[in-house]
Figure 1: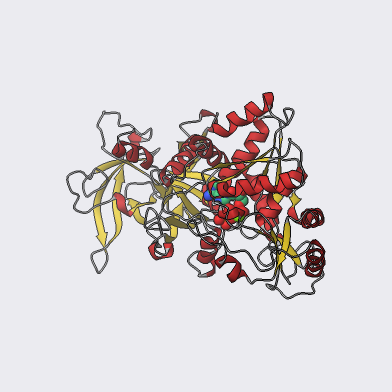
Figure 2 (figure 1 turned 120 degrees about the horizontal axis):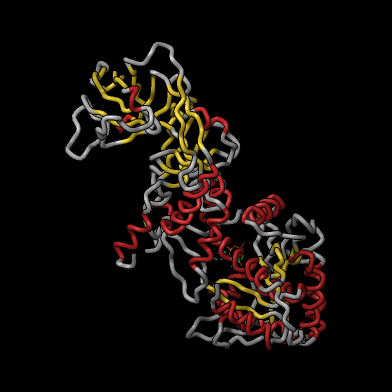
Length: 552
Ligand code: ATP
Ligand code: MG
């Protein structure tokens, strides 16, 4: 696997400033849960560290005391470990607050930073625009002594929140807006989950990020494209601080976007807070926890990330592509089981009274070592309501009055009689079975056109099964500038109770994914026994998309 970032790193290894050393970092803000977009960054940063025999540091970018919390720290670590990477001892930007403060004082002493008394709104307005020069702050030319004194006062909590900031003194007419005297520190009167009430000033992203990279010895700081205009500032700070030639350098790559979902923590939080989903780990969420509960294996997420690779321009990938990696994985790994989600009762009228039988079924045709199992069989069965029609159209080959079909791993049965309820709904089918077809073939060579799945009614286990559809109906929610939540699919989840499962499914470990024959892949819930989530259907929708696009 290679891409422009790996090529650059390989070149740096042979003749770059780092003496062959490679160190990356993954820098989440602990203010929410990780989503599939973060997984792209994680597989990139941790993957590169593995490939180049280097190191990747998990660094919490905890510079915003108002929204951050240690429960997110734990959850983020857990999610990265689940994805298959060793997080080691994580680092925290807050551990560098003293060093960052020390460096800020140095910049003030060099006349490269000043305390500005303008409020946030004025500062923002006076930055100007792309065609409009910025306006110098009236406080821009304060003396070093005055700046040092005021900055000390900011640090000691002598001033109200929002009353003053520390800004870098660069150039208010710079063509790059990021260079127009960016803010380095704000006053915050909040409790920080790690440093408590020690600090009254907090560094901005731009001030904290590169310097944290430098403190840790990062060589390659990989971030998403929207930070490309921040790179000159990243470099400027390090140059002014006199950091050496082996200082970190930033490279940008495209963020991951996926159809039919949103990948912004703010929007995901809104989904949770407004109750559109059950929580951050709802199986419809694109969060790592949601995907995990849904039955997406870490291997499939990593394979997807490797497949899409790293690009220099933003784009959107089809969710069906991700699903195809999930399906491919489960096709080789998942055990086959039988489950009836919408049961209709079948009575075998010629079944010997009270006789017990088992049918031998293959656990996974893709993996011989998975062996076989005995599925209990009896004279009372459930089949899928969809697999029967009173008055079948031409292309319907499954069960119908007078017709014979095969039961998976079992006998041929023929429907002799249909019992209906007061409203004409089918309540029960009376059928006969042919004992000579026990092996799934008729000795006389007669054929049937369909094989259907079944569960013995006397042995069935009841379960709740969640069927999912897209969380957002639009392929690109909010792309036209509308509120993405306006395209939420009201039918994204269908809850089926009273589903009938073969008894082996009661022993399926929590979290495991199985194939319900003919229906799809289903994940046993992580906490609730006998609740299953449809991970993905059996049909390869990605192949269809490629055919439509003429690329398949
Ligand atoms: P959001 O916009 O959803 O809040 P964020 O970028 O602010 O995401 P962070 O916790 O700061 O969230 O992200 C940590 C790292 O993950 C950053 O380096 C960021 O570049 C990367 N990242 C976030 N979203 C994506 C994405 N969709 N694709 C690739 N990388 C991403
Ligand atoms: Mg961020």
